[in-house]
Amino acid sequence: MDEQYKPQPVARWFTVAAIASLLFMGLGCISYLMHVFANPAAMPLDQRAAFDAEPAWVTGAYAVAVWGGLAGAILLLLRKKAGELLLLLSVAAVLVWLAGLVLVTPLRENMSANDLLVAMVVAALTWTIYWFARHSRQRGWLS
Image (cartoon, rainbow, N blue to C red; front, top):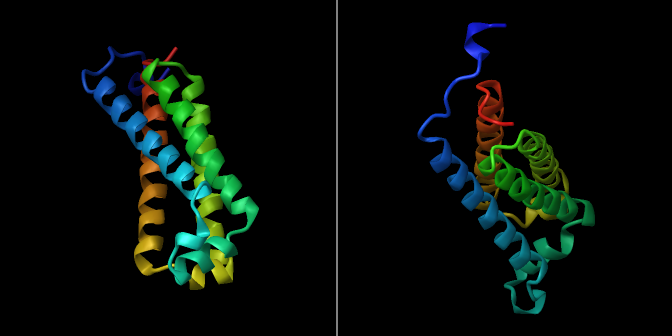
């Protein structure tokens, strides 16, 4: 076995990073719930147009990303290997969601550049959390 991947003592920062991951994924769940329970009649016209243009598969990918990510972050905090798989699922779903935001023309046309930037930052942070879980498994910190 490679020396780099032999089991090592759990780093002191592991719990802090796992809690931060859990908080990020929890915020994603709150954002998702606000999105699906939003009242389109109360939205400005551009936001309503984007809301109406969003296909069900984009909303579904959003749901898989946030709820899978939350479950993965909980398992990561509990130091379970299954958390890595759920976080990988979350990354894949975030990429599908991001592709939907870019590829669905009516949705893209009603999004601001800031909306797209936020989506890319979310994708990057989700990847970083998955990488952290993978790193933790490789170090033998997950059982």
